[in-house]
Length: 494
Ligand code: AMP
Ligand code: MG
Image (tube, rainbow, N blue to C red; front, side, top):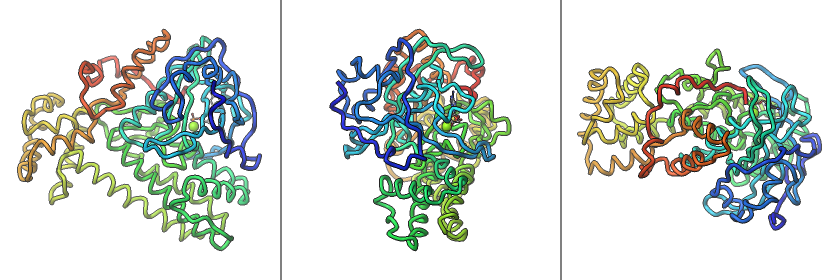
């Protein structure tokens, strides 16, 4: 039934050093927990196709994609600031790329990858499996990001099984089918630099530029043109990464493991593990319990993005690009991030255009949220209604006088603005989500998933698809976290 899909294997046409061809090791007795119909649509898959036995066999790792070449890719990376050497797809199997279209309807190829389909030569100490808990978290987060308009890898479906997987406790296995134009990472480039293979580094660069940056970067026709190609390419990756960091910061998203092997060369959010959307705001919030030093805390993400870009840029020394040229590119990161972040903040706060004093107003806003651990999402959301009714907003703060004091300044600033207040409210609500994937909501979906019940996943996908629009009957998904949410510990274990 899936034989009609047009499958290409461009990654498999790279030299054999880039990957190992292999077979997935499927789940026993699998069942399909959920399919994201939006993602299926991008791939041109009909509901009949995703409901078929063929589909389940492929997505549970029990049959190859017709016409596809299954492989695991090699890469390396810096983990927690330290060179980790060779890594690679330790539990991800690339099945091939399906011809589909993007959200705007333009034709494109989508790579399909099974996460959790068994051992590969790069599994190291791992078992090649993914537990249901982390698979549900990845599945939901990918959809949440799409709804928020933040670049991300996608997730097509989850298959599950009763196969046991051993972590801190015994859990069960699942596979998420991930979808992206490419899963190439910063670490894919670092790999060839570390292995002193500038020939393969150049090969990878050509591949990535031709396929994904052709509109922005001119392919070098000879060695002399390589530095210009590298700088054009880096400029683009730097821009995408800086914009991604601004996006994350503005919705209170913490990735949790920003190792260079978890950084997409396309500027997508990738490798959802111990991520978190903040509930109560803490500037130094750490979402990953394994991150004892807070290297990947919320207020570190933008500078870690740059640190990672330095690791990427450094590889191109081996292609004859000077350090000066690379640093010149890297110096563009900070202004791009800062401008994007400021623009977003102005819009989130409903200020329309920068005025004198806004810097202080926004600084004091962050201080207020931090000091009171006020809810990130609802503080922004309810700020839009304060000129009309400030009760819901003020109820988010424990030290009311402090919140009232800040609010007086804010109201005075807003009162100076021209125009109709409704426009401001609408514009703020269009960038301040009401629904985000709070940890406790993911947790509820996981409880149900363990009972093979996809109903919470289904409801969450419905609200997260349109997180800026209040939806009737969905109040529970916009609620503050219950007391038990504080107990949820998210670590690298997945
Ligand atoms: P992560 O921190 O999840 O990005 O993983 C770092 C590296 O460990 C990557 O190369 C993964 O493919 C690999 N890895 C993580 N978990 C497993 C597992 N259960 N089995 C095999 N490899 C894994
Ligand atoms: Mg990873």
